[in-house]
Image (cartoon, rainbow, N blue to C red):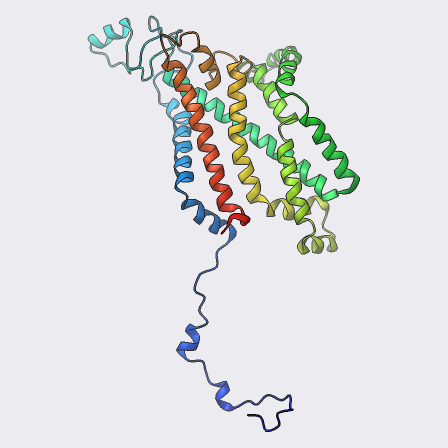
Amino acid sequence: MKENPLSFHLNLKPEDFLPATEEEKQSQVIMRESVSFWKDGMRRLLKNKVAMVSAAVILIVMIFSFIVPAFYPYTYDYQIKGANNLKPMEYSAEEMARIEAGEDVFPHLLGTDKMGRDYAIRVMMGSRISLLVGLIATCIILVIGSTYGSIAAFCGGWVDIIMMRIVDIIYTVPDILLIVLLSFALKAPLQALAQLPGFGWIQTVGENLISIFVVFALLYWVGMARMVRSQVLMLKESEYVTAARALGVSSGKIIKNHLLTNCIGTLIVTTTLQIPSSIFTESFLSFLGMGVAVPLPSLGSLASDAINGMNTNPHLLFIPAIVISLIILSFNLLGDGLRDAFDPKLKN
């Protein structure tokens, strides 16, 4: 007890300065180690079995699409004489004669199409084209949408109003009609450009696929722009943004180093969910004949070619349809898992 209860002086004693005991030290130990945002998100993602199975399926599809064709004995455009419309694991008469002569002939795992081309390698190449289109289109959407939305939100005022009204107008443009118009408008210029040295890939890819990429760059980024705008509007009033402005940091560096960096988790989730949408759009357009140029296959074009022989060879239609569904479902489930893992609002 203090000698004078009204005094503000501390009543200290020598034993108050003794070293802490082991029990007192243990009471200060942190029960759980602190983890970063990414480490905590990955820990929760790894616990999501559905997302992990989906990631494994995507990895297997990518291996069969990008690695296996390099070792496969057939090519997607090679026509085998007398091997039209073979069933899975069947051989043509010529191949049977070669087998009887003692020669090793690799089987047609999924049969052949009406042109005598091995269907397994065409499904692999079609998956590669669909995945590449989905990934490239999503990268285009990410770059344009994140840049446009962040600038609109950061500037605010009349700049934000004008930019978002442009987004509202773009929402009303029919994408399929624009792809058809661009296919006709770009056909002659692209054919002329394909004759120049170094531009032979244009003829391989086709004018329709290039038109699809142009439409993705013109129309499909508006959803990403709106999402980024909403995130930047919440972040731009933060203390670290105010401090960066006070230090004279340029607006471009603030957007790049502070605003977009702090909403990278949302960008990853949105990008992952955009990939299946891009793949479905490309497959749908290829099914209608506005996709890749023949003989380059796509999952949509494979399904379109197999419709006429659906009664006799239904597996030629079901196989690409199942692969498309599997890819889109896996990306959607993986995107849901990423959202559950990296969205702070869903942490608990």
